[in-house]
Image 1 (cartoon, rainbow, N blue to C red):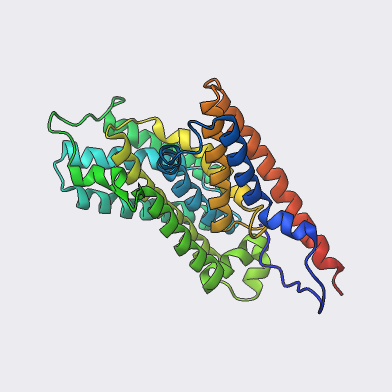
Image 2 (cartoon, rainbow, N blue to C red; image 1 turned 45 degrees about the vertical axis):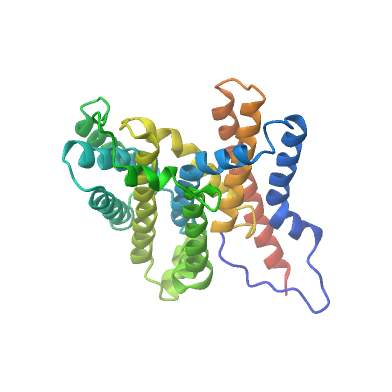
Length: 338
């Protein structure tokens, strides 16, 4: 991923149409898809109930994609996030149902555990010098083993009394007429936007992701900041696991892997919008919106079950291709400036 460009428009020069298309094209596509499905499905799609359903159902993929955005910004990929999500949601339910822990304490321990797991990933990648794909695939497999050990290969099912209402309410509640998880996503987007766009931490990550060698030369402690990136990403994954537990209310050891591909689709496709050429929180939010509207629309049109992985896979290929094209285009444009 490329760092923020230092290129500036000359006096009197206006950004070209390609600039606006690259920046806002994905947002325009979201609006276009919503309008098309609204015309095709006027009785079900453009309704408040459908919008609320989309916001609720896509909140966990959105949170996970935002977590993936942090490591993508540093030029790394954390393939353990799907396994981590599965472990986190199972562990929350295990502590509440099997061990009788108060649910706030269980949630806090799981989120902090996610931070620790991410830091371990970062140490392995940065200090053991193992490629992030290989390292996080290995640690992810170990997380999956721990998940199986906790559940003994089965499911964690609450007793007749069910789960605490306050715990399930962190997902089921409604605020200002909208599902509460939508506000979690919005809050996380704001936090990441500030951190990545306005604070030195984010700028350092972009430089590291663009050119780690140059980052070391100018004095950025690349190893430390990459460990921070992995830790921050896994903290978000732990929070997503808490939400998934409150949504599912049953511990399923294999459910986390279903979220891995959509998370990376959102993070990589988001790198082609708002700030083309680099991972950014607003772009990820727009990308998730495209996926959410598209999947909801084809689902209501009666698409078969295999349409969802087909849509996600095709969109991932498109995202990677567009991200690469956007980065090359930015490099060519910067090289052309005297």
